[in-house]
Image (tube, rainbow, N blue to C red; front, side):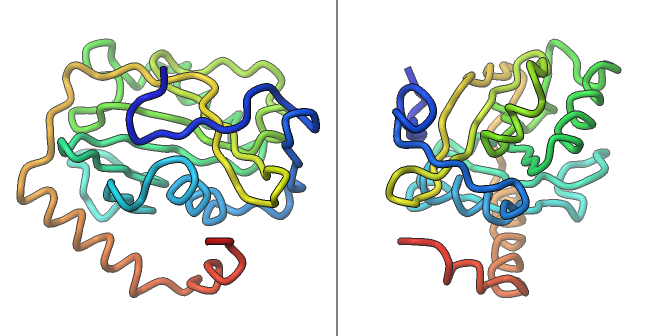
Length: 193
């Protein structure tokens, strides 16, 4: 089964399943974020915030490509990769054991996924996911709509806790900045609604 709030893509794979591959050079992180928010997670029912950094996670460097907050206030983190080299580098990070078994995703993250276009996964040639991570493939269906297909579900971190009121307000503030401070709002013009 698929977790509530997640839509599966086409069953099977390839032209027979109605999947048309968009060339790698056309995919950007923002394209994948929009595809996930509109056609995989339900942006009308969950808070979805791209590019979260600015110290939201204490003691953690870097940026989360996409965070999804459930109604119960649990976080799902999605790491997005749009080329095979970045995907290989991301997977190599986990070989050095930067995640522990009791809290594989950090104290706030309940589920962790790596999302990439189908052709990026194909070029990764049997890449092994980090322990507990889920896998999402992004593709274009026969109606030229971006879709996400859950290939491997994420494990649930038992150590994760729901966000506090203060954390929710901070995440909403960051979401507000992403919306109104965005220089790439024109991407929505190319997306079917």
